Image 1 (cartoon, rainbow, N blue to C red):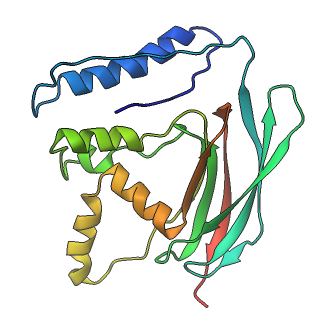
Image 2 (tube, helix red, strand yellow):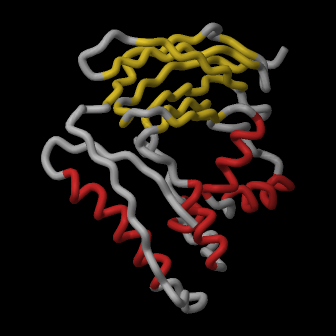
Amino acid sequence: WQRTNMFFSTTDLAKSMISEFTDLVNAVSLNPFFEVTPFGVHIDIEATADPRVVLIEDVSLSRNMVPPGGSFDVDITLRPYRKEPVVHKMTLNAPGDAQGICEVVVRGGGIEEPDQGSILMGWRTIRSLDELLKEFSAMETNDEVVAEVRSFGPLREDPSSLEAEEESQRKLRSQIKEEKISEGSFKSYRSNYYVDGLLRRMIRVVPE
């Protein structure tokens, strides 16, 4: 298993790198499932004095109203440090169960990343080392440009939907991410920059 990430700091770059590295090593070496032996770690570091940072400067949507599952374009203006801005286009789909006002969020990887709500709220736990590593793999990296639609979901007034709601609460972050990628409401790409910034826009989802 391996993980590649990019870091930037105006004060202590080593501290930023070591913090993530320590968390990952401790989680694997001290995992409650079985001993990993022999346990080895290889670190490959590349550093540059050139500030490879890009700022999310602006976001515009091709449509302000779509049907559930409908697609629309997102133009993302990115400004590399002290250089001219460039525009990157992504196409997103509104969630099939969305209704009313939804948020379109464009952000750098790891900025306002959804947490492990199912674990924090006591709905489930990590049950194996493979599951643990899968959740680590689903973690965003700092060089990602992320665009996603955040829906408040349909109102669940039918008591028969209780089981479905409970099942939804049990999903791990990796499962939720896979589902959003599959439906097209989440897209990301890795750049050659540390991506900074977060911008929101609103879109209305109305049945046809």
